[in-house]
Length: 101
Image 1 (cartoon, one colour):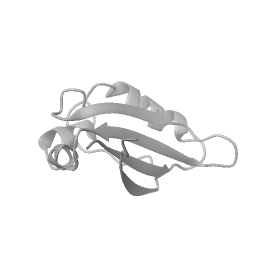
Image 2 (image 1 turned 30 degrees about the vertical axis):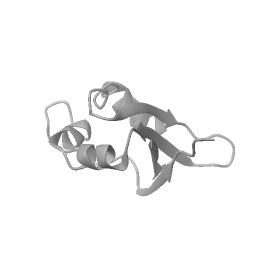
Image 3 (image 1 turned 90 degrees about the horizontal axis):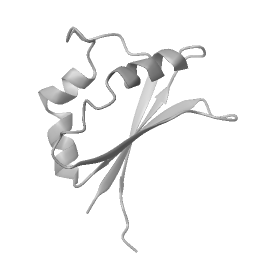
Image 4 (image 1 turned 90 degrees about the vertical axis):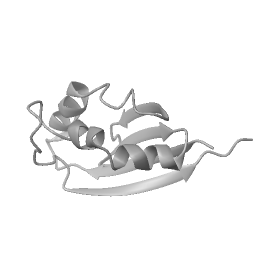
């Protein structure tokens, strides 16, 4: 059963473009991970101020394997491989099973 993992990011005012640039620079960093099915970065509109990082995985185990891997660390590093300060001031991880109807 596929799962969706959403990382809800609180981004300080004026920092959205930096967040988007960082994701654009690593656009396909996770594409080759086993079980990866899709990614979207959702920009807030209206009164909402949180960005949502939406990923879909073939299984919870596939997601956990990627999360715990060096590839995950590399996806969150600068281009020289060094960790960098996050743009978001807070993050909340949400997980869902996809219901097959």
